[in-house]
Length: 170
Ligand code: HEM
Image: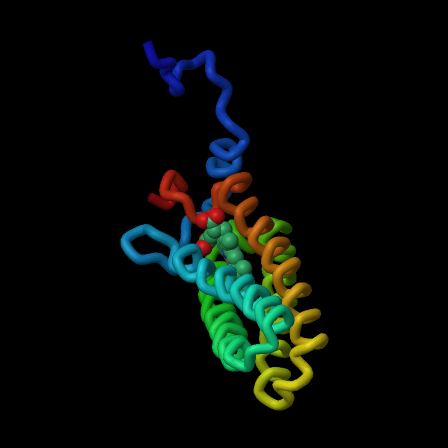
C-alpha cells in the first residue's frame, strides 16, 4: 500500500517549512503558472543553439552559419530580455521572493548572461568576420552562464518552492 505522505510521522519537507514561513506565490502568472518559467526555455535554447551554429561555422566555413548565428544570438538576447523583465516583476512584486538571497544571485547571474548574449549579437551585427574567435568565445561564456543562471533558477523553484501552486497565497 502507498505510504500516506501526510501521516503525522512524516516530517515536513524543507520546502513546505519554507512555504509556511514566506509567501512566495508567483505574481506574474497565467492561470497560476508563472510566466517567467514559460519564457526561460527560449534564451536557454537559443544561447546553446548559437554555440552550435558557431562550431558548425568553424568546422565548415559555410557563410550560411554566419547568418544563422546573427538570428540565433539576437533571439537569445531578446527572449532573455523578455524573460528578465518578467523575472524582475516577480522580484519586485513578491516580498517573499525578494527576501531570498538566492533570488538575487539568480538575477545577477541572469543579467550577466543577458549582457553577454547582447554583446554576442552586437558583434555579429557590426563585424561578422570576428565571429571566429570572438563570437565563439562569447558563445562559450554565454553557455556557461546559462547553465549557472538556470541552475540557480531551478533552486528557487525546487529548494525554496518559489512560484509553486502549494504556496499559502493559493
Ligand atoms: C533579472 C532577471 C531575472 C530574475 C529577477 C529572475 C527571477 C526568477 C524567479 C523569481 C524564479 C522562480 C519562478 C518564478 O517565480 O517565476 C526564476 C526561475 C527560473 N529562472 Fe529566472 N529570473 C531572471 C532571468 C532569467 C533568465 C534570463 C533565465 C534564462 C536562463 C532564467 C532562468 C530561470 C530558470 C531556468 C528558472 C527555473 C524554472 C523551473 O525550474 O521551472 N531566469 N527566476
